[in-house]
Image (cartoon, rainbow, N blue to C red; front, side, top):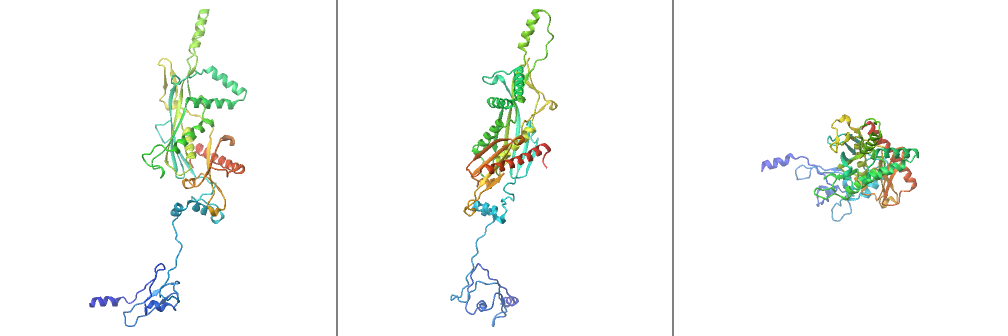
Length: 427
């Protein structure tokens, strides 16, 4: 008992702080009740007849002198949430708050509406492919591999053999009449008819929260594969001339004198005339290992980087074996030539919430959060000399002619940035 009393005597001073969120009951005669007329912060001395205590209450603005129930009412404060919780509860309001803050539109990622994500590219990452590249734009990353396979003309239904003399005559006529468009269109039609370009896009399991294991190929992956195939056939990126494998016989002996030898020479020329025996088929596989918006642009960037890195082996037709053979010497391989560099840039139109009062923002290179809030999308593909290769638009009519011209200028700027990266390497 003496120990307990001694312990109580050791507490010579006690400080109590009242929280604003909890009401405090004031008992009659208690020290806190005497605080009503004492201001915001007061200390009380020893209470008569008790152990020496002190009570200090800081900043109690919630005390009311006219309260008959001798109670203190707590003050209510508006609830606050972390940024990621606010983005999940009210995505349009969250994005609108960023775009309207401080008079300067700033997206949640810290970019302006027309600013792109900084890309990185590493070519030649896959050793088993003829060309490969790893591309990253923000949190969107993809791997592209290009591998060439041989397609013999015997395996093509209703194939008409192409002679070397015929090809040279057609090329001469095309250049003489300056009809380059017709030549390119015929090349694209032949590549599409023979199926020489086979793109395939996959979204890896776990690349985004919406892609779970065990599911079938998503609609997004199939749509992107078809869009890339259409771009390959309409952009004049490749030529069918570089994918042909010719059989060119060696030069024969001089023509012998005599009519009999002349006839034999003509028959021999008809037999050994040069012709196409096979084609290169390019299988283009693109795998997204991380997806955070704008997959089409990232897939096209990875495709261009991989094609720039592609070298096809030297191939020829062996008439004795009737087979197409390839050389194992890397020095004899041939760099795949690209006739254009079509670079896309995608935009999204965000209309804002009710407080935006009909205002709209055009966002370039959207991330995954912004993509889900934009109802109208525009994709512009630009080639050499600021040539607009392709325009894809869906979802609304907010983008007019003046906006489209501004978007084309941004696409030209984006293409310049990517061409410098593919030529000089990543910064």
